[in-house]
Picture 1 (cartoon, rainbow, N blue to C red):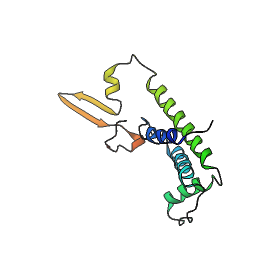
Picture 2 (cartoon, rainbow, N blue to C red):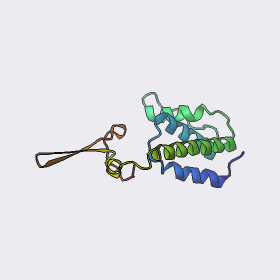
Picture 3 (tube, helix red, strand yellow):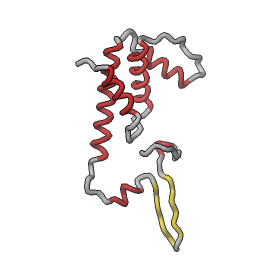
Picture 4 (cartoon, rainbow, N blue to C red):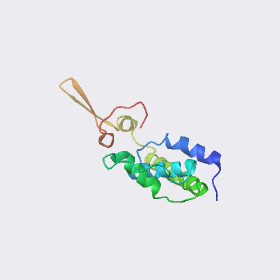
Length: 134
């Protein structure tokens, strides 16, 4: 089944709404498939040895070789769909769970002697604060 341009654009928008970080390997795969679907085979010069991030991106894109744009588009849509469904299923595991526990999933809240401590607990995000809801 071939993916239409509209399905591809919807997948591009859905990937921004993922609840959980899919990890660097999946992000590189998404990047490579996106570039292949929009620009075709890698036509950029290979980055320098010490440009680690761009070299990883280039390697991922270049590894797709001469994959047709339509195939890359379909692979991108399929990958985003699998990420979306796994994200939704993991968030629906405990529908009757305690709401307080869900509200403080990324915080450790302790109260002792009238002092409340709130500690940020997001090791996968290196405890960074961002404007997106996780």
